[in-house]
Each structure stands twice: as structure tokens, then as C-alpha cells.
Length: 305
Image 1 (cartoon, helix red, strand yellow):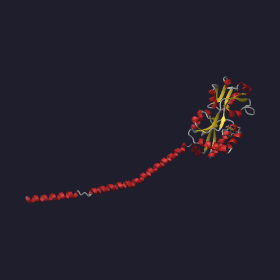
Image 2 (cartoon, helix red, strand yellow):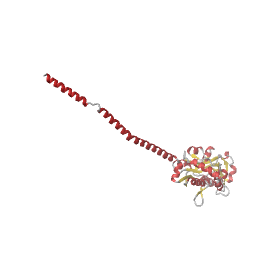
Image 3 (cartoon, one colour):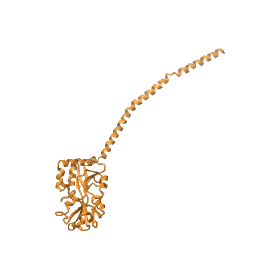
Image 4 (cartoon, one colour):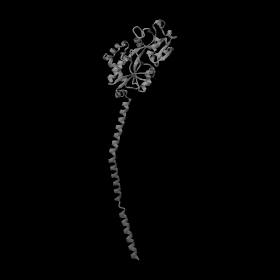
């Protein structure tokens, strides 16, 4: 019996030693080594990928910034399409057609020269003057260049060039009654035709005159010539070119000056084309080309230097 017990104890001790041998601590470092190796492999593989991803993100950001910059530039937009679209009305001596139907005039010729300096063609589109801001914002046109007075409405709604020409709003009446209308007080009982959305309309409102808006200043002249309006209010530069002896309206004349003002060219709000035009104006004044153009159309005395 004692012998059996001794054998049993010996067998139990042997199994206990085997169990201890089976739980050898060498297995734990092995697991740690494997994890470290895997982590190192992951870092080695993923780090370049992450760097590439960051580089791609930076590239995309820069590309988007360049695209946004190009989209914000009116100059790039106009040069990209190769055409500067100019909104005008029939307004001698600034914009009007010659015998062949081509647009000429001081503004038209200067617009062509500006387009040439940008390397683009120039297209003229007759617009409803009252809708000029809408046409501009809708990109039907790229600028308004038509003896446009720099009113508060214009300067708040457009990016405008520097003033390039002096002007005034004047009253047009039949020559045979002109002596009766030599001051603002004498105008109260007259009916006026004025271009809708123009400085002339502003003057009619300012002086509380009785007026009817028409599409263009040339239409206002026709109203007076036809006797359907007693008088008109138009730009002095247009009056000098279109009424009086030797013109198409020899029986009309201009009398009262209602204000003094300046012309500018209007672009979309924030447009970089305004600065480009200012540079062009400065250069053309310096080389004499602007004054030569002004002399051709008889507006040299009005040029802002």
C-alpha cells in the first residue's frame, strides 16, 4: 500500500513539472515581438500612403484655389472666351453706326482699342438702358460703355472705371421758343421726354418735372421734334453733336444746364477689368491716342486728364 502511494505521488509530481514546462514564458515575448513587427510593418506601409494623401490634398486645395481665382477674374473670363461684349445705346458722338452699319464713336473706338490691348475681339450689343445692371450681372454683356454718368446707383451696382469725360444734363427745346426757357423756374409747365434709367431721368425727378420715360436719348429728341413732348433732357455731349445748325435736328437747341457730371465705364461688381481699363486710359492719355480719338469726334474739351 505504501508502495502504491509513493508511486502515485511520483506520478503527480511528474505531471506538475510537465505543466510548468508547458507554460514557458518564452511564448509571451514571441507574441510581443510579432505585434511590434506588425505595427512596424503597418507604419512602414501606411506612412508613405498618408504622406501621398496629404500631398494630394494639398495639390487639390491649390488647384481649387487657382480655379476659384480664375473664376473670380473677369479679365481671365473675357480673355478665355476671346470677346469683350459691350452694352451700348445709339448715342452720337459716343456710340452710333456709320453708313455701313458699323459701330463708331469716341466710346466705340476706345472700346475697340481696349479690346485689342487685351487680345480679344469686341462685340457691341444695343441694350435697354434701364436694364443695364441686369444685363451686366447676367453676363449678357461684359461692360457698359456708352457715355454712362457715374451716378450713385451706377457706382453702387457696378465696378466702375475712373472718370474719363466731363458731361452735363441739358434741356432741349424747339429753337423758336428757346428764349422762353433759360432757367429752371421756366421749366415747370413743360412735358419732358427722358431716357429711362438715365441721369436725365434723375434730373427730371430732382426738379419735379412732368416727364415720360423713353427707350433712348435719341428717342427723346424725336419726341420733341415730333411735338409729342415739349422738351427733353439729354447729355450735353450728345446735344452738341445732334442738335442745332448742320445736324439732323436743326430746329432744336439746348438751353438750361441742370448739373455737372462725369462719364465712366461699368463692369460687374468686383471685376478686375476696371483696373485694367484704368491702366489703358492712363497709357492712351500718355501716348496721345485718346486725345486724337476725342478730336475726331469733337469731344476733346470734355476729356478728363
